[in-house]
Image (cartoon, rainbow, N blue to C red):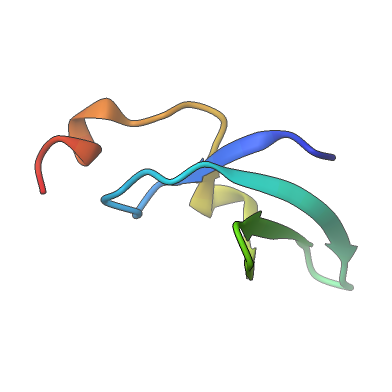
Amino acid sequence: MKQIVYLVTDKEQLPRMVTAIKVTPDCLLYELSQAQNMSTHYDFEISPKLDVMLSTTN
């Protein structure tokens, strides 16, 4: 945990920190924090790499 990741659909490519991993019967969910905002995502929604092309095409 505490790894910095990015949402693959976030045009701003704001860095988020993995603060929790929730185990469900069907999958793992990752709780991400960005400033005071927290959200939960599937693994395919996050990337450890910044997508520069996405952030520069706003």
